[in-house]
Length: 233
Picture 1 (cartoon, rainbow, N blue to C red):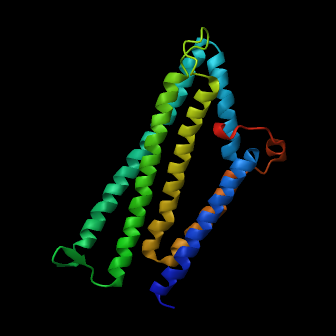
Picture 2 (tube, rainbow, N blue to C red):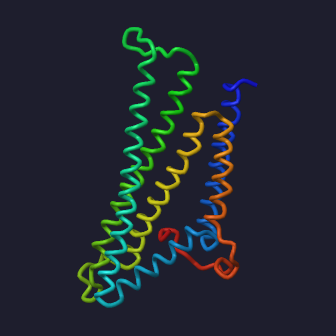
């Protein structure tokens, strides 16, 4: 079987494995949140926001510093993603320059040139998604850093509640997770440059690794289901 034929079989198989895993993960997060790390962390963030807003004024400083650390982490990841995107764009431009122009259209030399263009473009899209997700994470964390400092005494605004602030913090964290997943997704796409077999191997490794990172296997932590508002997650 030729390399091009392997691309048509192994690459969709690797993408299907990653997609199926994340669909199963999303189902578990929605139906059984305490069986996943993401669900448990979302519940505990709501408790943390409630504790910070009900505690002493010193808790406000601690909360803002914690959110600032999260903003810095998202900023680093967003900066790295946009830098790598620029590098991939330069490589695509140089590779495209090897083609022949007929009128205003670029005609690639052969099918191999087209496949390489698709590979580079796929990596670029994944990195740009990482950048956009982390920008939104920074956005929600920035909003939360202000809202969490608003005192509850005296009810300065009926629209600011602990649940609303908790949802804002969780949205920032969820966008951070999506950005990290998108960065993970770029690894097999990068290895696709070296062939479909390394790409499929990377997909299998990611599914195996993420399974142990995403799910809870301790019965004491995930054994008792709790009622959770879907909007809070």
